[in-house]
Image (tube, rainbow, N blue to C red):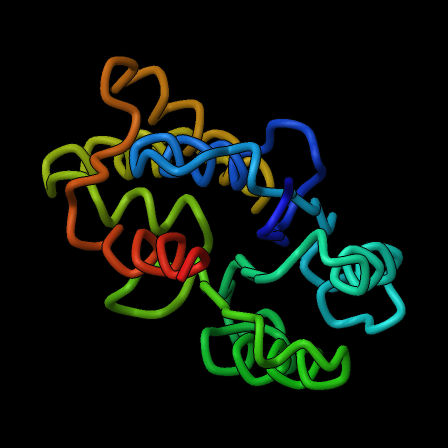
Length: 189
């Protein structure tokens, strides 16, 4: 029954990336059973044409179990990675892999970032969908907490957001969600 594959960072269990996508799928009244999620682990695995998940994906495509593919990957920052960091580099390198995999006609890309700067990751995107006052509150806490590690920073951002806004975890009506919503709906056209 699976018709659509979504490749995302993290693993196949409930990660922050696929949690957001699954909630949005539910909000759009799409059938979650028609999706197959591929947790790609770290971002670098997206750029390895022989990565194990691509072999499974290609088999699913050949067997007719998958008809469309959506790549969801963080932009990150170009200053941290000149090859794969930043929106433009990420998009260009993913397009090369999609071409090598020979799945261009059935694939689409969504790069997770803060839309105005086109930098960052899932957490940057989420912060872009809340009010200025809420964002300042979270950023002030992070500044005074003195967390240094990028991974801690991302995890803490997620936890603060979930604790601070438990009843409305994501504002899917925010215009920054429009592109992702359209890409998800287009998977069934």
